[in-house]
Length: 239
Image 1: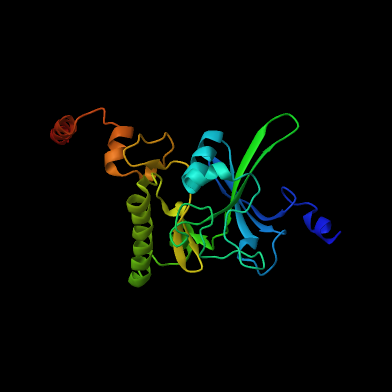
Image 2 (image 1 turned 135 degrees about the vertical axis):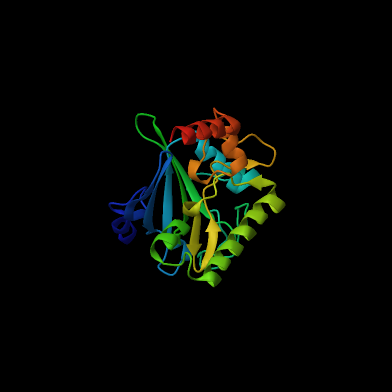
């Protein structure tokens, strides 16, 4: 009876949504929630629910995060290591492919269909304290605290090196919103655009954070630089 009472009004019978729509994009919605199926002392109790709109991107992120082990997992099953009490061991990878020091781990995933056959899919991850975007906006670090900025850069460099060197993978969507602080460490999230090194990039990207060599391909200039300089010279003479 107590477990039933806890689950009333929850999402999927276990997630009590505390902050709906914390982040929204064209491809997903992220809610912050409490997993009432976990004890208050369990690190896996406070979660972020990433509901993904497109199956292709969901499947890509799941495959990248779990690699070959995704074939041996199923919807709703915990993917992390546990201690004798059943609580999460925070530094244990479990079925996760990436090192939890560098990437926010996947706790579990859910795939469900409603009575009309419509499919819903979501990823459950540890809840972060703040994204790098929020840190920049609200903590007054930019341009002031050199030590903190250096720490951010080192954390991100280590995380990217882990992907590149250990897994032959590029993230392909690195931006402040995709770096999350958990207990003082900055870690990567969002792998629905990631590809193996040498593979063709997906169509998902954030235009404001593209590296120059990719931007040149995505947004080719219609006019050559020489033509723009000639136009500038003509305008100067007219003035």
